[in-house]
Image: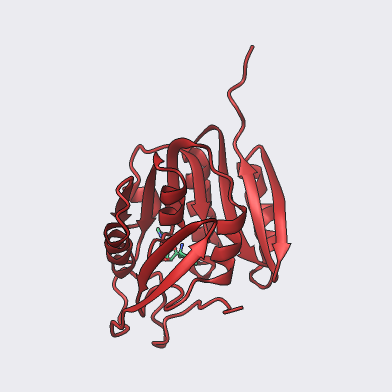
Length: 214
Ligand SMILES: C[S@@+](CC[C@H](N)C(=O)[O-])C[C@H]1O[C@@H](n2cnc3c(N)ncnc32)[C@H](O)[C@@H]1O
């Protein structure tokens, strides 16, 4: 297990700042998950430098994806979740968004390097830059360190962007308050369940009410 690299090794500079101060030090690694192999570049100042985060891996293993539709990788970092989803579902359109400019530059470059074209990458505060976009699936290893208020704003906004019957998949470590976060977020959806508990990570599946029929 590689643990959860929450900061950027440069004092108070967090991975969720728009322009990280940490000196750039790109690092490449290869991942193989669910039959998808990608060579990805990460960097200092971006979440999980130099390796796939364990929580991200738990989410990648558990997420269920429809054959097609609109997917969102909320807080994409260097892009791993959205890019795996895009490779698994070539008929889907995948939007990757992050507030960290270094992260989204990496995500776009990683898409190009792995010849993945069914993606768009947006930079900025997700609720602001997603505009009118709506999604069938939201995938998220959330930025717990932004604080509860911002975290619940991000997840609440994502919940509102789900089409009826749409699903948000999210991973949180028990140490980061997985249980209490679930309690706060569950009312934003019609149903929420824990689909996996392993290595201290909980993977949540939260569904939006399907269209009501009279
Ligand atoms: C825990 S990291 C996950 C990164 C990547 N998805 C992964 O699994 O390796 C959370 C990400 O959320 C991003 N983030 C924080 N606040 C955000 C916001 N307001 N809008 C969009 N992304 C944000 C951070 O910059 C960070 O890259």
